[in-house]
Image (tube, rainbow, N blue to C red; front, top):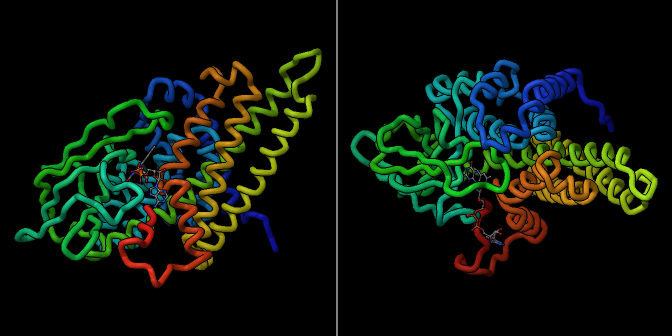
Length: 381
Ligand SMILES: Cc1cc2nc3c(=O)[nH]c(=O)nc-3n(C[C@H](O)[C@H](O)[C@H](O)COP(=O)(O)OP(=O)(O)OC[C@H]3O[C@@H](n4cnc5c(N)ncnc54)[C@H](O)[C@@H]3O)c2cc1C
């Protein structure tokens, strides 16, 4: 077994690390405090080749870890842009759809968003209330999406709607008449430098060529995206874990109480050791799941194991990091409270921790063939 990263993978990691240090680190705290989305940053990530859906899964995970170590808002926007939007266009798009959008998304000149969640359809993605109705020459969409990352700033949206054939995915330019967007109401707990929006579709008319994949094939499109996306979220959580450990070790070396470094107290040492053990396990889970994806042997439940473990380990680490920092950890002058707020979101989006557990349990137990459709567990959202 060879755990070494190839020169190409190391290069991808180093490019992401340099971008994280040079572009993200100086701005992360104020961008969070001022809830500021920076479009120029997206273009710079594109110029540095960090938004390319053609990269193997392992490279995307290394990039997500490096960005996530410094700023989960930026890692999140890149995951939506690359894993969810560009990845779906590359996998399911017609030649015309790919030619129109992919070069712009890779360069960061265009931003993409992925509009699945609705006020009444979150984990239960099969119950979408957004309707796609056939009209002469194409389709008309009616409905509302919420919590859409990049929704207010994107040029292109992948919109999922219920049609007669079943859930169908559409590629929608966001300047299309009938599509309105507004900021998500309320202040988010974390990911504050990301853009989250409500999209309202009222009489949104689209041509036949707007369908992504085939009519009725939308759940397959959605799940292919989430499989890539969840792996990147898990990798981003590894970055958060690393950041928590680095900040805590540094603080435990410098802070003195009772005439000693707090790192000399065994309870602090135990917390650091647990964090380091979680970090090592989380990183291996992500790399193995990504390696399986690249070898064509990946599965939804392997990705679910990685997402579940990594996001919850990041939360545990952030919780301990705040405690180790004492009162300072409770202030945004130190980054650890932001790590906790961001990690909480990662436990929820792209399928909550409950949903990941359902997927894992279903892979262990199989479906109950005797159960009626009414009591079957819902699809993973
Ligand atoms: C920061 C952020 C960014 C997001 N970005 C996007 C985006 O870009 N695009 C997009 O489409 N969506 C996005 N979302 C939405 C996100 O994917 C949903 O919030 C998430 O899937 C959960 O759906 P819900 O909020 O409707 O919760 P619900 O599905 O209503 O769940 C409520 C609770 O019930 C639990 N639950 C539900 N069903 C079951 C079950 N069968 N078994 C056990 N427990 C269950 C859930 O785990 C949760 O604890 C984002 C959310 C956040 C917070």
